[in-house]
Image (cartoon, rainbow, N blue to C red; front, side, top):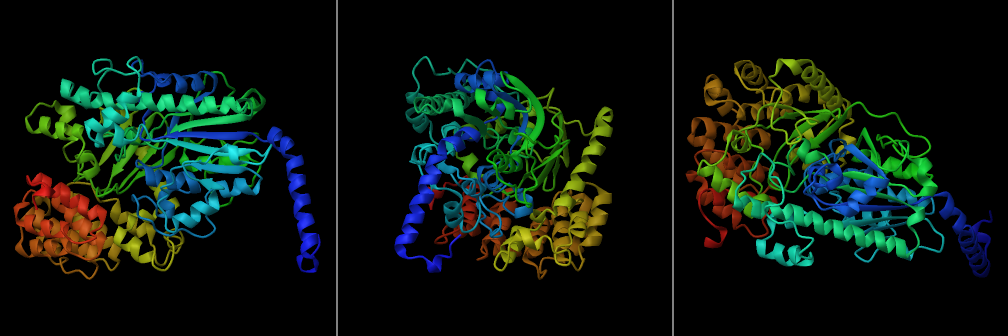
Length: 639
């Protein structure tokens, strides 16, 4: 090749023209040899509400037709239970707990070598477009997005490619999002969902079965009908995109993926570390010329192979002829060379908006095991984006009036340390098998597998967010976690693994760790104390109070919360109030979040009011304040 510095401008221009002509002349060959790929992604939807997954009340003919002639996945899982964390894994092929992207909209930096996977498709000559959601949950998101896509906008699509150039195009449909199914007002839903469906398309309030964890009343049916109609409108939108593809004569050369970004956007599903939060509908349709790329065949095939979102990036890179980067650990599950099926996959739930949490789960497709590290908060924990929904208001009203059965009430109570559900025979997860001796062997095996994977991945999200933010000022959490001297994952997890365990033995072991030289070990020791009863930790009162002035703020605020909750200690309440007013948003959120689950709230009303009024207050802190003030009977409009 000629060296550019010896070329005249005219010679360079001629060469550029020749290269373009060469690309265009081979475009048809490229298009024939490599498939076009269309992704139709939807939001906040569980397979239990899709027709081809067995729901006879659903009206999803477009999705069902894809499944009828394609491949339907029974065991497809989002790696998180909220959009931003899920999408960070989708776009990078890296788990959130390795990259540090599990907390919703935390925006920590990631290494420069980690690219949005469409970048690698571009290197193979593909035109890549995104229409149009990103929400990748990383720092420098605009730069990252521009590098990944040729175009990412609500006008992007395959039609802007060169003639014959293969494409990868994403269309994200928002009509099933939580905003439609529960959060926006009922009037908004009527205008933006119901009125966009014909009378024949609408699902009436008496035309479906209610999940057993909801009270079956006319009021609840009114709210829950929103789920079915929002999914119906989504199905209509899918049909429009597929007809568009056909009109451009591209259907017979395009592999179509359909899936949701995580579980249903309703209480107990989204934001919860159980199957209802993780499992997603997932269908792949192959045209005749690319049937050979399906390991399972086509034509209504159902596979129970395990896949999760870390598998998508390597699979797409492989399908388009690229080389999968070493940092991507997912398996290629479609194409001429597929990896062996996984026996287990690890899943995770962390903070969602103002709802702090940490859950790690593992599944083999038949059973799902979840470990709750902060179980003093219920499944239906306070998250303002949920709380403002009519269905949430109705549920809390019914709970307060004693209208709920034992199963329905349980989602308002503290969680157990562990869940084990048979998700093949108990799709709504109504029976926790942890204490059933018949399933003891399965429980022990899944416990062991989960711990092995947490340690193997060096799960960086076992650091408090305060620490994550501090690390991110100078380096990436992804790279920090690989330094064993600074991130002693075994030592940290040994302390964290006690958190959530209740009883004298766990409390005794936690007490021994309260004075550990490792600040993260101390953090997990005192965090574990929050799930213990006052009676259980009474003997350790002085040890707990001794940490109220700990040099590490996450330890100090947690110790204050434990002492305030269990002992109603005056100095602890002062410290907790001061922490609410912290200029550090992570400390302020921790403090206000603890108050949401403390019985005595009256002493903190004025403090929380003042925190809410702080100019330019962090959104998560502000949301937590709204929840607190609502609990004590105040509306933010009143002050």
